Length: 478
Ligand SMILES: *Cc1c(COP(=O)(O)O)cnc(C)c1O
Image (cartoon, rainbow, N blue to C red; front, side):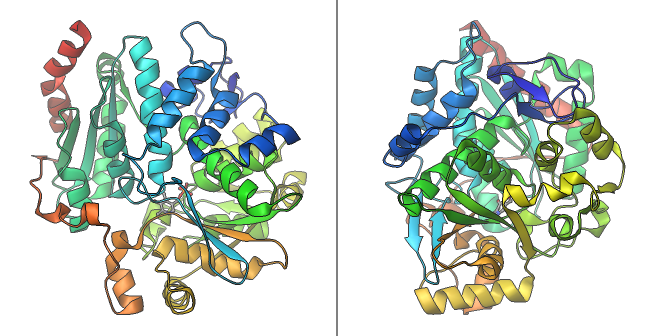
């Protein structure tokens, strides 16, 4: 498979390159030249395959490119088998499917090390990076900023990697004790927690600042594993195929409800649907930050200013703009790179309400809705009362909106994007008691923590990265 930019300004590249480099050089997003379509036999085989095999099969469609030094199907199957092994995921099936009622099925995606669905993609991504960088005898420095969840997932996935060092900036004393412990108790020499005396926005600005220093970036091979990385999208396609094929039954269809922030998760569902997964609707569930719900209702995409983002009780969906949305709009325009470049370089957003591209939304099966704090609380209560299941606030947003789109005879698969233990305060508000904490994490708050406190300056970040360099030089020499 070859990859191009949504804006047309990139020479075709192979999977390994877009995996490592992430961004298209013209500011657009990397997309495959074509979406592979699975035939009836392929789908029948996947319907009975264990999860790691489904993931391996999806990877093979997108990840083999015949390049010398590229990955082959055997490499990809091995990476998938290791990424979803029993040492990483608590559930024997990796992904769980649990019928609720009213035609809804809860799809558990948060059985991984950090209890959030980000692990599904990050575990695979780390294995792919090690494979590619190992074969090239190369090393990379992943630099990121986190307010809690993504950073933790990346650190757990890359802990112990021979070819990647992770430097993660987090705001000192501003994460929950559980999030802090999840990150700072990791004890691997390639994981570097930098606790910044400042807030999350400063952490993000520092990453931008240090990465825009080209000399430093090249010298330290600095990259990112953020939500627009194509590898993360591909990894997520697998659970849409896996769960739709299992739940739909022969000749049947399902819909999905997806708690949405940066549009990465639901975009993966869109890719799975195009590949032939039996998906009728993809329900885009937003919280109070409803920029995407506004688009699907009106055709207008009005990005918010960062200061207008509301802090909510489903914080991982608090966004000003949806970074993966450009990939979907590219599809709506039939891959018109000129139009996409125009739309996504206009500073505040765009209006497609009277454009054929907006009319194309219907054929993609996407519908939307938003959920507010009171809805979230009511849904957590109702799901607990009726089916004795505790869901986290993000999953509750998905279920809230899913209810508006239930259709007889079409199961609605509600994606569970995190375990409730991560968002204890909201669960206490809804149910009057704290959610259960998985045993493996019960004592995490008592473990020793490892982190370095730094001032919110680019120099402090650069100094921390430079100081860790001897370890990497040693790795290369081996
Ligand atoms: C990241 C995240 C989301 C949003 O996913 P996107 O791919 O950004 O749309 C939803 N819920 C939880 C718990 C998350 O961590």
